[in-house]
Image 1 (cartoon, one colour):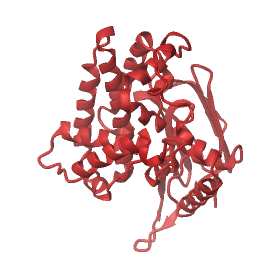
Image 2 (cartoon, one colour; image 1 turned 180 degrees about the horizontal axis):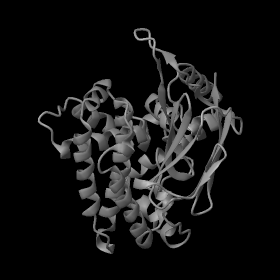
Image 3 (cartoon, helix red, strand yellow; image 1 turned 30 degrees about the vertical axis):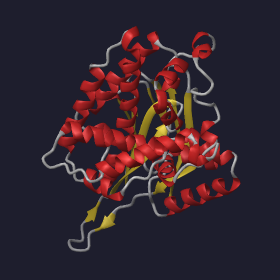
Amino acid sequence: MTAAQSPIASIRDQVTSSLSAISRQTFEPFDASVAALVITTLGDALRIGATVPHSLFDQLSRVSEDQLGAAINHAIEGLKSSPISVASIQEAVGERDLAESFQIGLVRTCLARGSISEMLPGFVAFKLIRTELDELLDQQVTQQRAEQLLGQRRWLLTGSDWTRRLRSDSTDDVAEIDSTTALPLDASSSFEPTVTVVDSYIRLGIARKWVEDFAANNDDFRDRLRELIAALHEAEEDVSLLAWKWWRGTAPVPVAKRVTKRLAAASGDIRRTRRMIRLGRLDPISAEANLTIDDSDIVLNVFEQPGTIKRIEFGGTSTTNIGTDSTWTVRVASSQAAMLLRVEDVRGQTFETILQLSE
């Protein structure tokens, strides 16, 4: 089967066509349902590797936080209306997959706006309801069955496989899935990730399996990926921890340059400068993180899927106390040269790396 004939290429063409149509969509007057559709389609594109028009990011960057909050509330209503029963399980699985795309699209929208999705009104409630739906689905359907019920959308799991949170059944459900419709285990290593997918992986940690599996089997792609990570870091762009860990393994991650006080030219006053860095996803933990750095403090914020994290250690400070809105916050002195980051979830899974500030 050639790339042009592959199921991934087919659905990518469909998403590209949808993006082309909605990129001409204006948000005036604002309609929350339209905005939610646009953001979800953007998420579909990031998961499957469709090309996203720059004009779409320009339009989304002009949408206000309150308007994005209204789009989140619309997405919440979609999740709340998802019926969980044997007769309607396919609808519920479909709504859950749309919610995955919505969140990915929203995070990328916030990146274009220079903001953080977790700070938007309603976002924490959205994640909480999505978690509740996961728990309900886990009681009704296995991972394999859910992937079958997704139909063609199962190919989007290559870029974000939320179904791995469901229980696995190697007997009953697998027997019902025809080999021509099941998602092949090596799907992510068969098709080269597009520029859009690679960008999402480097900046946010999205589509990790797809990018890393393909890199493991393609020397040229692996070299280009390393060069791109280095170039973005040199330009002081955000680079996800997953991208750094793929490249550097257990070596310290140079996340950013140290922030120092600056002298204001006009007044002669010393002003504190601050920088926020997105660290992206913390696989296998269902959480994302960022750092805020100034001349005296480094603040780590970890945004979890509600009920996920048990303990966080950062820079010699350990906490088991979650803050408000499913956010964990740890503050350490910016004088530290290297800081161990270790996150443990309630299942015993861990994410660990060493963060380092350069001069």
